[in-house]
Amino acid sequence: MRALAVCARDDHSLDGYTASVAHVPIDGIDVHVRLLHVPDPSFDPAAPANHQKVLVRVQALSCNFRDKSLLLRASDVCRAGHYYPFGSEFCGVVVEVGRGVSGLGPGDVVMADNAYPRGDDGVPPGVPTNHSSKEFLVLHQSQLLRIDARILPCEVAAAFSIGAQTAFLIVRKLGIFPRADVLLTGGRSNTSLFLLQALVQAGAAPTVLTSSPEFTDRLLQLGAQTVIPVRPSDASADYFDSIRAAIAHTGGFDFIVDPFFDLYLSPTINLLKIGGAYITCGLYAQTEWRTSRAAPQGGKDLKTVMEWVFTKNLSILGNCLGTASDLASAVDCYAAGRFTVPIDSVHTADAIEPFLTRTFSDPQRFGKVVYRYQA
Image 1 (tube, helix red, strand yellow):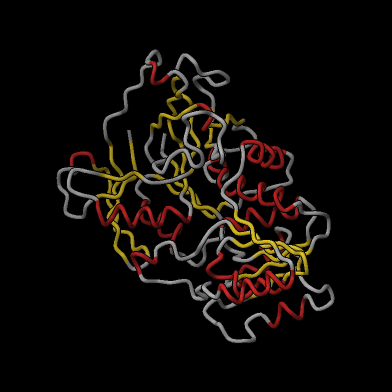
Image 2 (image 1 turned 60 degrees about the vertical axis):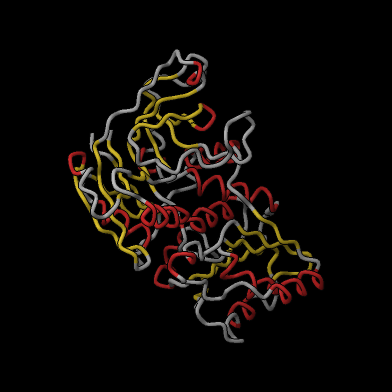
């Protein structure tokens, strides 16, 4: 099987398995990545351990923001003779199934179901794998969703599930109502691109903050009512004056949806109406342990945040992924033409460095970046 994997820089023990090599700068750290050809895994459908397991051949994959930290950790600890396949989303074809599997069979096209929490005993909730670049994966049937590749193409499915499940649960959890005034932060992030469309689908009127104003037109095309440029590195008192002016006639936002609490929680919480709700699903400074790059705003002024929470009766909510029904709802919306997945680019063969650089480092990226294995 093939695998995109982090390897030790001077490891020659893997040379016989290596198809191509790339040195990828990620947050100023040179990560050594190879496209490997290694032995296929064994899969016995009759084995008790595989009773409800499925062997999937991956056709396409993508990375998420969380993968950056995993790649840097692997680069630090990977030793000679070892390799670390990466990636958290995929689309593939079922090769074999265990004898207890129902609803899936060889030839079915599937993608990851990141349900959190998950109902099946003994099956870990959340992302099924951190190694989706392994061409063959063995997963529990509940971690997979069968799709119609004629409706949901493989490259789209490989970039779909984490963002879609997160966005649709957030909208459902908040109880978004028609014409709700919503502030969405981090507009160019992949999570926010999914959130923007899910909010619009629910009838909200999103105001979007972005530090990449060159993409204003594209955000408006996806349904943003207003796009406001911000500079996360600027912590001055007038940082959000333009936003306060925009909401002067409404008294604030009903909801704030924020994928990066360490960037936006402190400076935005007081923009909520009385009784409003703020929800977040992640943090920006995930590689601070390795790169010493803290979030520009820091998000550490807890006293100020809580003063606003008390005096305005606000709610602060957290969110981790979504349920299987949230993913199914997103797929239905996609099939009906009411929801899209912005794909920035698709890479294949030995284009390892462009794939990872575009994913993690290129300021011109807009949407998900996909790697597809050649047939």
